[in-house]
Length: 502
Image (tube, rainbow, N blue to C red; front, side, top):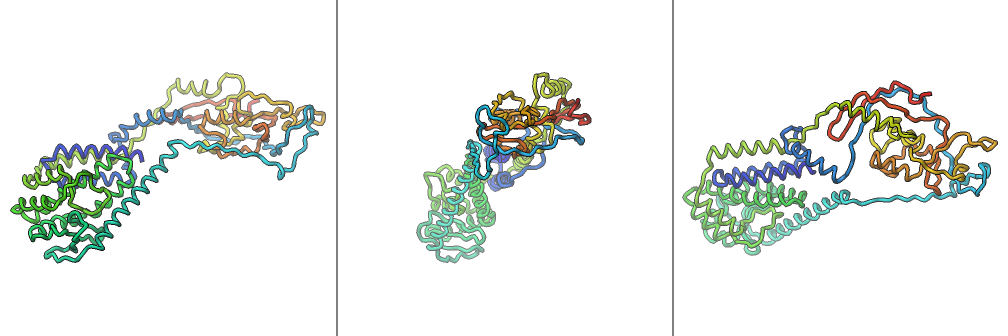
């Protein structure tokens, strides 16, 4: 959507500039035809293959900077390797959670309750952001505008249907009706079977009737009912974009001017002055804007646009060939930069310093304890949501946590003599969320929770536990190569060594 908004905005602004620059050098029929480019750009939801000279390519740096400020998301790192078969420790069967044991109790004192009678509280926090609301606001506005469009046109059609009377107009191949009241001006209405609707003033003289029929017939030949419908569709979809409303209003004006030129071509230049007088007599001057969602080609106009129409009819300016070629060339150029997508950013190899950073700081840090970044290499996944959390947190979260003696009794593995068989790691929900948020931008609830069923969970402590004697810790990794494309960094390393050294 944002690509369409950016490119259509540039296209509309350029066409408005061309319209002003060549207003006295090309016909309005040529100018009106240019607005079809905007329709295509707005209604076709994809772009041509990316190009270095496109508007979207030029906008990439600004877009990335705004995205970084809005989201504050770090670089995305993708790890690529050829995995080899490795030994993994057998998964322990999950141990059911039990209530707190009495102080000083032993492992034999802990009883496993009936799970059907034990209830776990489930709490889920959902945050509604502005970004999540925007699509619904867009859909709601689209629905309201679309319903208003249907209402306006159905009401107009209902009025015409009740008041129209057949009228004989010799030489007109379209149905003609007379509407004696309620119609502000003559118009053409109807998508599949367009008909001309006349007012009593329009049939007050044969000359006026001939001029109106010529004008409305030009609308029908140009396919203006269809163009009006497509214009209303654009307004309904992009109801929030002021440039689309401006383009619709200006294109509707150019539509009337183009029909004036076509009518004069069919009537002959000798009737130019008389045709202008007909417009002055029949077109009601409105104070406010006309309804842009009405598909009927009514002849209403404000003072400025009416003056422009009369002046162009009186001057009878012709298109200059050089100006027309210039407009076509400029329109082709602006289409080339607005109909093409953004060029994909080229990969660049990582420098030696960058590889050293990943080998010495991002991974394999000399800091005491486990380095959690290494553990992200213990499983394959395409989305952060699908990380195998059992592999990731097999040796804990890397965050030091205090475990009470009661917790040890509930989750530890003991010999008959009461000695602890193997150590137990504690993974509190806060620690898990801290690790996941820092490295993936997700909380545990936003992941698929893959592998979490292999841990013990004590709801009263809001913590998971894992007892093990071996280790799945990925002690070291050697990044041999890497490349960067935009905000994505791909790292390559061989998996030809044991991750469990003696």
